[in-house]
Amino acid sequence: MHEILRSVAPGAWVLDLGSGRGSFPLDACSGRVVRADLEPLRGTRDGHFVRCNACRLPFRDGLFAAVIANHSLEHFSSLEEALEEIGRVLDPVGALYIALPDASTLCDRLYRWLARGGGHVNRFLDEKSLIALVEKHTPLAHSGTRVLATSFSFLNRANRRSRAATQALAAWGRE
Image (cartoon, rainbow, N blue to C red; front, side, top):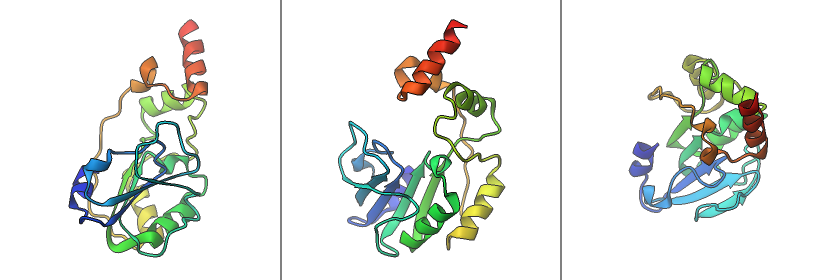
């Protein structure tokens, strides 16, 4: 993500989609950042915030030099529509960054069980299927993949944000 953010031209637009509080600090790039999500969260980092659905983005075609979807695609109920919209608002020579959990791992399975899904409605089991899906619904060609290690950081009480996850983890700890 930071490679993409560093390459954004000064003043170019960057969409932080499904960002909640923000996926990165504003000083990570010289572009103009728009944070977009269904609901604003308390403590949202600065920058423009737009409340919207990823399937109906209120932006003109080709506006964004980069779209960052950092742990958000797994939450979109209409994934293919959201990808079409991402492709529409992204500059044809722009960059798309996607990070998401690998649903085949023990870590993700444990998270989904403890957090009663954790808001995840999409399961991504392998990178080839995701690449094919993105290429089918956007004008982008795949340029690179990095497989990142996951952690059990959601088990740390200090990292818990959702009430349901906190309650599920507390109940699990009592068993």
